Structure formats: structure tokens, C-alpha cells
Length: 255
Ligand SMILES: [Zn+2]
Image 1 (cartoon, rainbow, N blue to C red):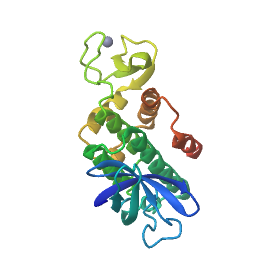
Image 2: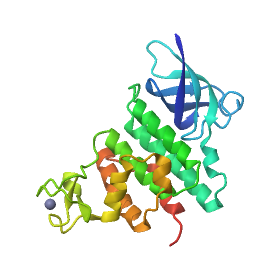
Image 3: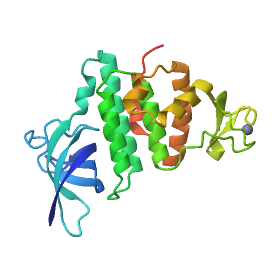
Image 4: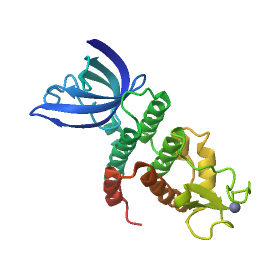
């Protein structure tokens, strides 16, 4: 038996028996863990609001030999994702919480159990902070998707058309879904098109912080191009539906 203490992001929880919960969490130093939180529903002292998806806290857990499930003893909250709803209109607050679940679900899908991934932890933590500030939730979501896929090494290159070698892609690109690449507009008359502004957003995201991406003045059209392209790319890689995405679509404001 060994006791660990680590900064962690809560990814999701589900019921386990009468009063316990299974908590899936990403630790900063030792990757994703699954733990049994005894009496989690009743024990606000030990868990409080810390078990909301994408909340960050200091987790104390015990690993036991030959058991996949750890015992999660407590999570001292550092940042609750419920804070991201503060200061927003009711509609925007619901979207912020919906996105906290969406980000947490994608991290859960991408992070293998028990494999240290500090960069993914840092991305999740930084995006959680940015979600608690003002700024465009849509821009933050596109930034997160870009970086998530980039960290996993599956984001298509945006510096050069792989078909004709053209370097200037600032006038726009197209996603060739079957090849998982972006090509220049001359090379792809069909496909999912991304405007020059969308390409500019991707390039800038390479050096932006999440808060800078959310605060930047990016057009809705560019963000919609990116949303379509990213949804296809994520579906290709996960080979399954992202559950929280359906909820987000229902929360979309009428334009
Ligand atoms: Zn080309």
C-alpha cells in the first residue's frame, strides 16, 4: 500500500454501489487514475464541489498491489469548474459548464491509464482557468481541440500543402478527411474549407495562452470553420461519439 498526493484534474465520476463514486482523475505526475471515493455523495468535507468535471484539486489516494482501482481519500479543491459560470448570463453559464464537461471528456478519451502526461495536465489546467474568465468560449474550445490533437501528434500540418508543396496557406485551406490532411484550395475543390482567418487562428494558437485565444478578436465564421474541421478530426481519431458534444449543440444560442 502506498499513499500519493498530487495535483489533479477531475475528469468524470459515476456511481459505485449505494453511496460511493468512481472518480476518474488526471494527476500532474502519474497520469490518469480511477479511484473509489467512499461515501462521496455524503462526505462534502472530503470532496465538496471538487468532483465536478475539470475541477482541480490536491488529491490524496492510496494504491494497492494488484488492484487497478485506487482508493481516493480526499480532494482539496483548488479551483472548481463551477466558478466558470460566475458572472455569466444563465445561457452562457450553462455553455461554460457544458464545455468543462466536454474538455474533461476529451482528456479522458485521450489519456491512457497511468501514463504520465504532464503537458496534457497543464493544457487542461490552463483551459480550466481561462474558462473562469471572460472571453469567447468558442475560441477557447477550438484552441483546446487544436492543442489536444497537437500534443497527441495527430493535428494536420498547417505550414505546407502536402500535395503541391505550396507554403502560403494564408488564403485558406481544406481538410481532406480521408487523408487527415489540410491541403491548399487549388488542390482541393471539395472538402471542409477553412478561411484564411481560421488558418490565422491556428497559427496564433501555437504561441497563445488559452486566455489570449479566448480574448482575441476571431470572427464567428472562422470559429465555425474550425469547429467543423475539428469535429471530423476528433471523430476520426476517437472512432466514437463524444457524449458531451450533443449537449453542447443543444445549448448553442440561436443566431
Ligand atoms: Zn496544394
